Length: 639
Image (cartoon, rainbow, N blue to C red):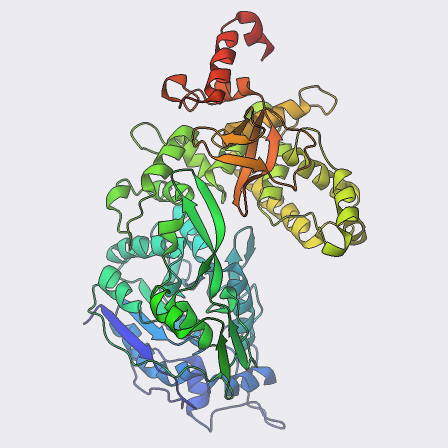
């Protein structure tokens, strides 16, 4: 019996449906209904009804209406072939054009397989199906659509899981989740014992978490022969998955017809979401991509030309239901000569700090030889950063602190700051700041009301900077009973600050589970804000800039000339600032900044601020002078 196989789904005008009658086949519930036209269907005046095996309730009229639409999806005629290959192989690679229906239909077929096979977990529970998505929006919207198609309740039999939001239950048979969330689940369930089938969707997007999952699931599948893996891709680059992960020779596949439907597309609608009724695609040829520079430790969103594969995906959004056109705002020569064939994998342009921490938590010791699809060059920088944070010891092993940090779905600097805040008696406040930093900007600045928006923002401004301003804003939001009108009047994005409130709740539960005390310094104490700023330093001591004599800032060690972002509430230039982001636009900006003291840097992060390994600069001379002063007992007591 073969263990690996590939299916190519080609576009079809009106695919037919046929259900297999083999006695040993795990057949589809949907197929059984449609295969036999004389099946028991609920009709007026009839006492015979077909019940949904997942709920025990009769199917609704909406179910049958959606079923008719599903029959016209190109994927639909491949049901029998898919089920047969799923039985005979442990790993499948499925290639299907965007809009073929693979994201909604394949998981439903897999539910039928797992449900009727009846496998149980090691704890005696029933196994379910996981389908990963590269984006949270897709996980939520697809789960809602599939729940409707399966005639079940969202959050019950079909659910989703994204960062800081779990909409599933013990009854869930099918869970759509971001690839990062499945990676986190693997920390507590290393063999993915809860799942009978894992589907990696949109694998061609080569997100950071998907690439890591590829290597991880390869290891798991070798230890669990009963685990089925389905890799779904929309482009010809699927051959790379077969060669690298599943060791299948690449096959040539005829291009499916494109230009059948029109879409006005951004890169988020490129593959993850299919929008009905779109006739035209306008493709500017650019997208915003996250790019990490390991030398200066800067991760930025840059506008970059798309790849040829992305261009084909965008064009493929056109003409799904009737003739359409794609308008490309670039020349054919630019397409042929300037665009790279495939999108540069995210793992090669990302800060790997979080990934390394997760892999260490998963028990992967030898990261250098981990089966990355494309071995990243930024690995050593990530190991160095985690060592400075105390998450890894000098031998590269996970420390007790690192083990706790890995429990938080946060960047390592944020999780270190949150844990350290307990020692500074300000974990409640740092919990709030962390939540506010984990959501999009809460302050709104509409072009037609910039002056009024700026004045409203200054009502919450703190003299020491932006982090404490975010804290003030959250407190004001709660004091005003989370009122929507108050947010509108004060130029606050209600959805974002409400999401921050939810994130705070989720993080507080993790803290409680880990036994981390939530406490605050007395507000009347002179140390209230000082302790918060020290806690900020404990996580972000590597993101500090010093004010030079010429009036610009220079980042510590990396020596990048930067300016304070115009959005800062600071009305002066502190000598030392800690920053949350390095923003590359027309100038180099540091955004979300707070005034800090140099003696805190020396005390809190002595290894990083070891003067023997510090580049010669103005900041070093200042730090050496302060270090000498710190030798005196009187100054030490003042700290």
